[in-house]
Length: 117
Image 1 (cartoon, helix red, strand yellow):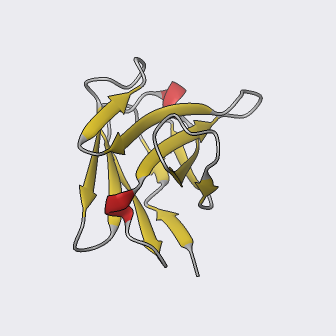
Image 2 (cartoon, one colour):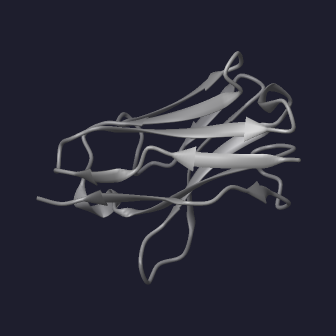
Image 3 (cartoon, helix red, strand yellow):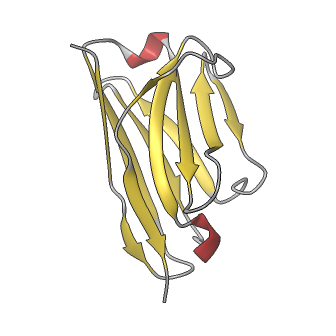
């Protein structure tokens, strides 16, 4: 059974850090692209970062603050988020696809990230 489970969200003060995890089961992450997306209240879902075949992409809004990485042994992709800002508040989702640009994606459940003092 293919499954993606995301975790690691929470409440953090501005300037703080969180690490999100996206654990896969039923397939091997190494063979697919894994992307992180987020959706804030009242806004459209946006891509945050993606890793595929050794290539990594970031949205301009998170460059220099977020780092995506893959642990093959754990079959897990991480999103390290530093210097968090209130505008980073959103539900974060991970998704897998054939490539970072594929429209067909398999989604995990979301994890809430709230940046507030």
